[in-house]
Amino acid sequence: MKCGGCRQPAVIDVRRHNAAFCGPCFVRHCREQVRRTIHDLRMIAKGDRVLVAVSGGKDSLALWDLLLDLAGDLSIEVDGLYLGLGIGDYSDESGRLARRFADERGLRLVEIDLPTDHGFAVPEGAKAARRAPCSACGLSKRHLFNQAALDGGYDVVATGHNLDDEAAVLLGNVLRWDGEYLGRQFPVLPAGEGFVRKVKPLVRVGEREMAAYCVIRGIDYIVDECPIAAGNKHLAYKEVLNDLERRSPGTKASFVSGFFDRAHERFAGTAAESREGLRPCASCGSPTPGEICAFCRLRSQAGSARAADASRAAGAPVDTPVAIASPQRRDRAAEPDTHTGPTDRGAANPAPDPIEVNR
Ligand code: AMP
Ligand code: FES
Ligand code: ZN
Image (cartoon, rainbow, N blue to C red; front, side, top):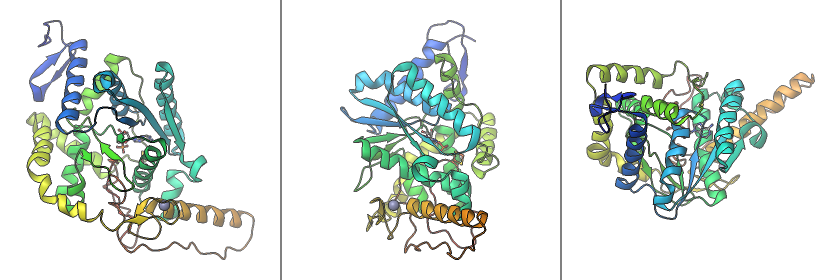
């Protein structure tokens, strides 16, 4: 197999492009794909300050690397943001790799640690709120990405969602015909009152390509998947799509690009409506349809559960029930869309969940 660009031995083939590449040509190819996506969808403007959400995984570290390469041409500033989610060894290792990437290149990495800064880890927050962990995780990420960008004066948050992520989420949204989620599934979410712009510059590149990019560029990333996400529906959708892609290369790309180009517009109104009439959260100021935003409710539920546990451990009677204001409206549009996991709704939730999670 020879590289289509320079005829040197190829190290990767991309079947949907019917092309093979050597290392340097592949890196140029990825850079060009991302540059074109940013340009075509007007994701980033000259002079923007970009905050890349880095999880320590291949996609977000590759994205940071790619944006740094493009930073000169685009005249942008690019920093990283890492959230410690308190998921045991997985969080320790992912944080270490994000820090290492930044340190080795002398980059600025903004860090927020959920347990230290907000008093709870994802697993305990999820348990206290009786939500699926991926759902509590996704809602925390969306809130904290936006808040960190606002606090740091960034214009845009970039996440590493790739073509496989988008195809899997799209399949889930279509299987449920969820109009609001479909309306919000787009690689650029514009800024609004209390929201920074959100972009996904990797929507045209596949997961396998990003793994190859990291290997070629010598980027060390966490290979393990989040232990909590194992077995969720999102991963099952990915398997189904991989099978279709094997039989018919290009299926994922045409599914996703067809939706963005021809169908998304039909659902956009529903999503726009849900951003109307938001007001600042009484606790943190984030836009919310209710009194208190979903993230502050989650934090409060986790705090109450922890206090109850401490009283129990001390042998004192627990007399304070966990009291959380119930929101008037579903609070999903209030927070920008990023997470890929939580198409799994909170199975433990007996009642319809008011803070439904998008992605
Ligand atoms: P996920 O929500 O885990 O599918 O990840 C999607 C994207 O969200 C990643 O590519 C990152 O850009 C971002 N992300 C996920 N986890 C973190 C984290 N702990 N800290 C910062 N960004 C993250
Ligand atoms: Fe969010 Fe695993 S990273 S639940
Ligand atoms: Zn709040």
